[in-house]
Image (cartoon, rainbow, N blue to C red):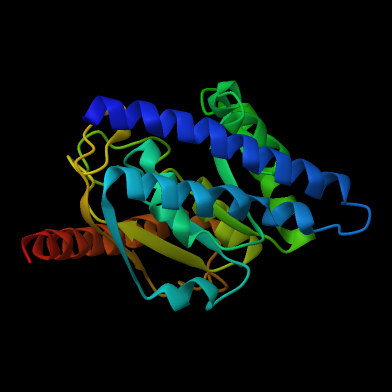
Length: 252
């Protein structure tokens, strides 16, 4: 059953990727009249695909403190990364007028990769450090010029164990250099419930918690290491809490 669900998820990714691509293309063509319309494009994909994927897998999603998504704008949204299904779960907390940072390999995914690019999201070559640094600086300028939110997974890759991996500093550099607050978004453990890549798709309760905005205005670049460690600890503690809450909801 897990394999069948995985295949259907892949087909859904293509279908909703086509829908998102079509909407993003129309928004791009309308840019001369509506310059910021393109940056609403992620919602054209995340909302319908999220509903489809959660329904198919049987995920019962609870979002704690959803109002905090709109508490500070613009902001850097960071989340823990466990699986491709994060798009359907933690992606529900990505506000409009946001761009998402992903790896360049996403461009190879038919339809979805095209949508991701044309929607104005950012593709970074993580293997090329000099290129990645240049991209991060380009992102910083784009955020400030267009007053956009940013969504990024600071671990840089998916955790295979469910534990939150060490953070890379790009998200924190962007937050400190722009003065934007960081808003951590923490998803409970998806092991067994929603790991798309291993067909562990039995579903169940999933809890996502939006933590309070963390201001960065008083920080400088020399604080990046300690700041990222502080934020990671907050997220690890919350991860333990929401994972326990999700398991409790499963038993009811």
